[in-house]
Image 1 (cartoon, each protein chain N blue to C red):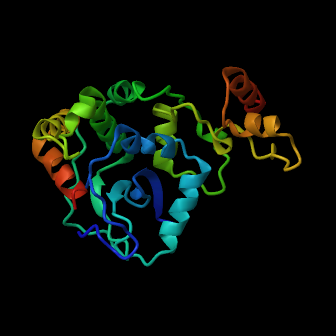
Image 2 (cartoon, rainbow over the protein chains, first blue to last red):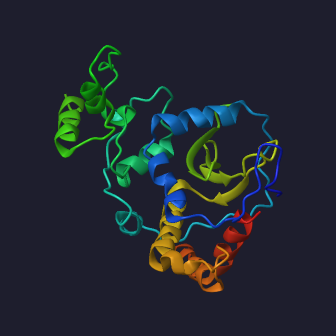
Amino acid sequence: MKRAGPERAPTPRPFAVRVSDYLVWVRALSISKNPIQRSTEVCRCQRHPPTRDGHAAERSSMLSVDKIRELLASHGELRPQTRDRWCGTIPLPEVVAEFYEKIGPWGPTIHQEVLVRPAARFRPTATRSAYRRFTGYGTTKRATAGMEARASG
Amino acid sequence: MDDWIVVAEQGGDPFILQISTGKILFAFHGAGKWTPKEMFPDVFTMAAGLAAVGKAYNEIGDAGYDDDCNETPEFTALKVQRLSEVLGDRGAAERYFKEMLG
């Protein structure tokens, strides 16, 4: 597959990504609002069936939940959570819900879809600090504890 | 279609969960159309695989690149080694990076 295209500028370092680039998925897997919106854009594009000549890796029998948690632990705090805490605008796929329950999102950024129940909606007129407490952006331990307390009712 | 959800990305290139099969697909953006290839059999394997590759990046740091910012052969070998440890199949790990290079 050619990487070059009309929308893609040539890159001087093909695949020479940094750690921070490679671990963007850590935030994505926390099902933040933005990645879901991007996926919507993907779905709107002209779609073609996935090619079957791709070399998918076969799932290894060595991969236990504990092993995965061990691998991810060095990249951020793991926070397993039940599926009823999902408050996104689209249904949470079963496999992602299972992933959240067994592994969990991780990292410092916890987003509103994950922690806050649907009844609790952010009011645009609220203060900046309230917004930070609500969304978790720039969150502190104290604010996070508050969000969790609200989410648990 | 509601069958695709982006669950990860690398520099704007999406890792896509195909909900109907549970497989993880990968595609380069900017190609004009989306023709993703199967990259991992499920989201759990993806998580483990990418974490293992991230571990390789953490281990080698800037020493993984030469003066022209190209990956050193040692770095490439280390990434393949870490991924193969997770997948249990060196051939699959080598194919993964071959796909990622386009």
